[in-house]
Image (cartoon, rainbow, N blue to C red; front, top):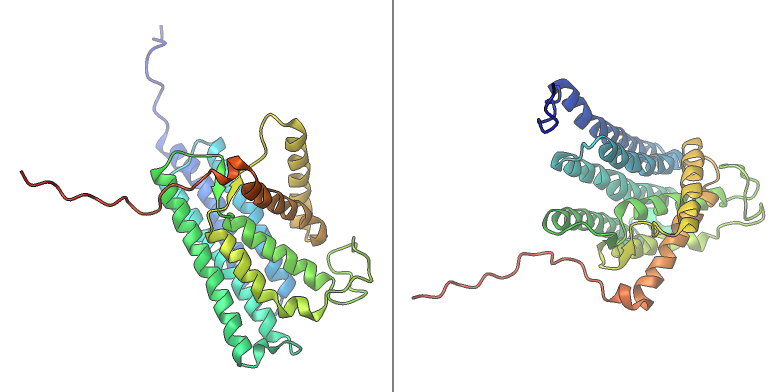
Amino acid sequence: MTDPAAAPPEEDETLRRIRYLAPNAVTAVSLGFGMLSLVAARDGAWALSAWMIIYAVLSDRLDGLVARRLHATSAFGMQLDSFADFLNFGLAPAFLFYAYLTARPDLPYGSGGTAHVLLMLACAFWVCCAVFRLARYNVQAEDAPPTKIFFGIPSTMAGGLLAIWFLVGIKYDRPGDTFGGLKIFGDSAVVPREVWLYAPIALVVFGWTMASSLPMPKGPNSSNKLALGFVAVNLVAGYILGFAQQMPDVLAFMPTVWLLVFLVWGQVSQTGRGMHPPQLFPPPTRPARRP
């Protein structure tokens, strides 16, 4: 007769390794999308480069889900995910914008003058903010209890939004272009040259939101069924349209609204304004008193 208080049988070592490797394999696939984005941007395949960043966003959601479902979270997985996020949402979006803006003959960024230097500084600022955001998140995850609040916009959201609005921009860059399916804003809607001229400002602003301490909920309140249903429908639509490379103007809707609503909430809500991130650096140590 089996003792109910006995310890559960030890897990087979091969199965245990597979269980822990599964989420890391998803992260490796996401890393591959980031590398493909860099190659596509180098070759002038602008849309493909941006879609690869979106693919990385979608797969980034999956590795966390797989890890939780398999009870396979680990410190190694967290570090691997951070390195993938640096490439996918730090380096890849910056390189895409740099390559695209310097390749357009109607913009001053490829001439090697002051505008070119400013673009390089904006791209470098974006990458530095992404690195800072990821390093701070890892430190706080180790030293502080988990919360339902992000401090600073997640690099996944910031990089994904930059890529999706880039796709919207090139979709509406020319009248009659059918790239990305139906144009929900109408065929007559055209992105003016000035939007691309001031694109480096978007890099700086979005970069700052990553490095900031702005509070932002990780998800809707679990008690609000309507909000949960809205998020679920948009999440499913995002995976379908994202992997199909269709209608970036629809894909941009939900994350943009979510970002704007909670950025405002963090500033006008007393609860939001009262939230502060855990201390980044260790507290000062007092010298021991001499007896």
